Length: 150
Image (cartoon, rainbow, N blue to C red; front, top):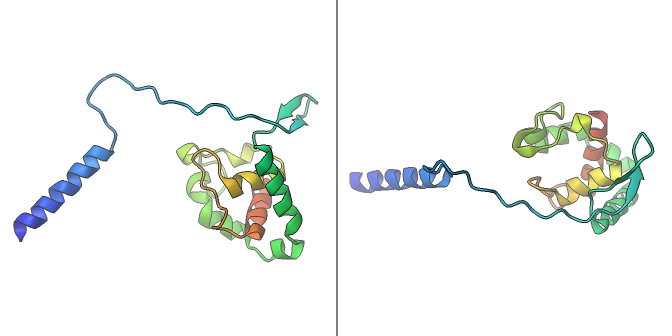
C-alpha cells in the first residue's frame, strides 16, 4: 500500500514538473502571435482623429442588441459592484488596475459601452467569455460599473 502512495505522489510531482514549462535550454522560444483581426467601426478620439474599433462587427452588433433588450429596471436590480468583485477582480483587481494575466487596466479604458459589453460577453484574448455565465442584465450592469472605475 505504501508503495502505491509513493508511486502516486511521485507521478503527481512528475506531472507538475512537466507542466511548468521550464526548459533547461537557454534558448528562448518564440511564441506565435495571433494575426491581427480586422477592425471595422470607426470612431474618433479626443483630437478628432479616426480610431478603429477592436471588436468584430458581429460581436458589436450582438452587444448593441443586448443593451437594447435589457431594461433599466433589470440593470438596476443587479449589484454590479458585487458581481464585478466576484467575477472580474481576480484579474482586474477591485479598483480595475491589477493587470493579472494580461488583464487591461480598466481605469484607463476608453471603450464605449457597446464594445465593453461585447468584450465581456464574447471574451477577448485570455479573457473568459461570460456569455452563459452571467445574464445579459448582469453583463450590461458590470460594463456600466467598469465605466465608473475610470
